[in-house]
Amino acid sequence: MERRKRGEPLTASVWQALIGPDGAILDPEFVKGIIFQGVSVWSTVDTCHCQTPLKLSTVCWKLQGISHELRIDVWKYLLGYYPWSSTKSEREDLRRQKVYVHLSAFATE
Image 1: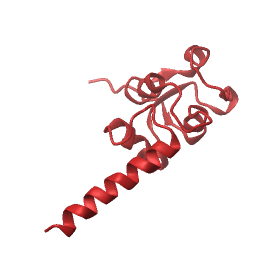
Image 2 (image 1 turned 135 degrees about the vertical axis):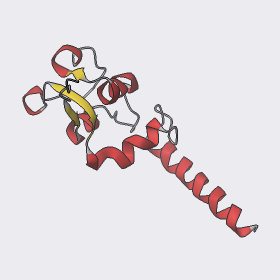
Image 3 (image 1 turned 45 degrees about the vertical axis):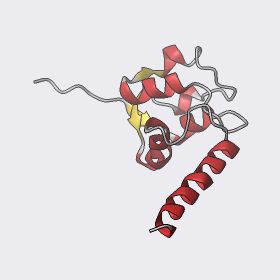
Image 4 (image 1 turned 120 degrees about the vertical axis):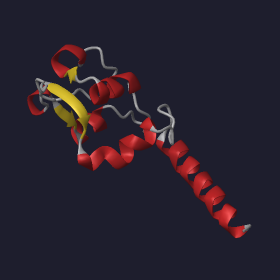
């Protein structure tokens, strides 16, 4: 069986470029495309709705997967813990609510 070479994973610089001023992910489908299918940045960066342009000279031409340093953040979106459209303040509120519910469950036992 022939092994297929994977592209570089989603990097912190690309992740930051995909986050809007309010902290919401600007193009969730683009992020999922990078992670699951691999994306040629050269052909898709023009269609990405990023407000901060990607610096193509610092980004590998093919991205696939998630870099280790981003997994703790990105998996929260992939698993539905955070909605893709949530802002930073909405995520902080959601996290506080989840912690409260979790701690309340232990207090009633």
